[in-house]
Image (cartoon, rainbow, N blue to C red):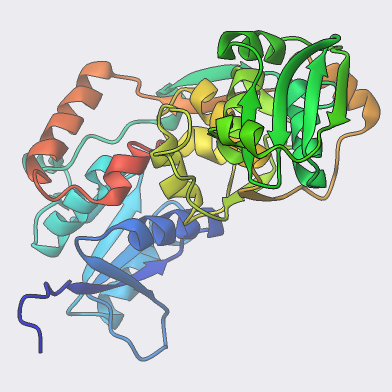
Length: 372
């Protein structure tokens, strides 16, 4: 036995009376937390939970909590709601805040975080944040535009790279680059700043011409095709959503982009770590990750361009007319924002102290989720 291998505590958690969305959120959170192994169990499967979360806002929430107390006398049975209960109980406030969730769960398991009926300040004294009403939260809204790769330098290079033949590319009658799919390299005939300018233009006259085998010319090519297409996608996207992906398209990253060889993209590692584990739509990404929308959209474009994204469209695709209407403004996405900035900073500071040296992947990736 290797005594140097750290052991991870397992806590069995029963989620009672939660809807499918809340269940999925907790399951994802527990999966990504790496300090304590939270294992979701089901009633009647033979596993006795140490922690039971009961949604007090669903039908019969209070009765469900009382029943769970009787069924699992040795477990911490927690009342989970936006408003504290009218009775004394361990209490977890909605909306879920991922940067404080596991601190609160640990407090609850240790006997803290108990709401005492009729004493409104006891929750904060026990280390619990005051619940905030979802209706009071401001909304951060952002409009997104979409773009198609047809007629762009990005789309043209993608097609040529897939064909596998070494070709020279001319733009508007002038040489721009030589593509060597045989060795997966690119040789630029112009300055990179010129390539960036071309990525910002549409209606280009794009031509290709096969080039004979030329080892001397190939030796001069230093840029990897994959890295080149990644960069073209970023320059072309400029904070727009690449078609055919839509805000409701479910995305999953099939492999980690090698960021040591790719152009720098802010927050690419955080987005990669999320999408490699959890399929999600753009709408969900924007709600879960406190990142700039432009960074998210540029990453989606780049990952899609190099073939690293799997995606699944919704059952109701847009019509051609809808696409024309949405091209200038593809969608408006919203995510809840803190209603009280001072309170949010205080909660973050408290969480940072409690989790110092133990911050898991979830805290680094997801920040704060506010919602039901």
